[in-house]
Image (cartoon, rainbow, N blue to C red; front, top):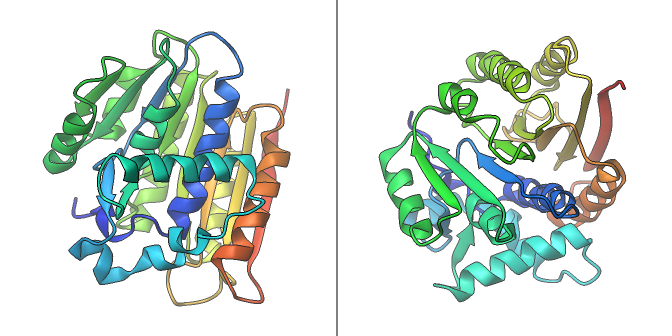
Length: 281
């Protein structure tokens, strides 16, 4: 696998994903009982936006850099931005936290986290950042076999964040659906957040159809489109599938994405959508 998130850290997709991650974790914290946060493609944990890779693409300039003026930000975005500032306070001002760093910051004393990555350099970075936190376990393994081996966690409550690289989309989406179905079968009560890129609508329609036919009863999709999805430029938008979304998540996600898209994109046809794919009791 050649993917390195350093090139894309802090871009608009990260901003969306991390804001919704904060929302899902906030809902888990409403109950006193412990939960487990699992990140299947955890990456390095922290990224340097002034580093060579981030500077080569400059994607963060259309992401986190657009949120300098965050007056009136929805609560999930505000929590996310507090996490970014906290990460910068522990090191360089150019630091950007990945989902493991942001997730670990949300853990209470009774909670735990499992971070999975297959790449040696990323695992070494994760172990460096979290070596003094007994609540965190880092595993070097392929998430497509590792996740089902590690669930359900002992807490029986929690969030699984799945954010694969999609190096070959024609292979990635079918492989991902298999993982989602297998994981849900192993842990049907877990909350799952699955990030996906929006490039062409046809591939997303097929992805949705396969998920809707999977037998999973509670599943919604969140989309943020920087421009219309028939644009051939590449990454037109960012999506998150949420399985077993907490009560109230739908409405808060709508507010959060609407606020974000107006700050991240200037395209007249920018848009957001939150909708149920399946909503059965």
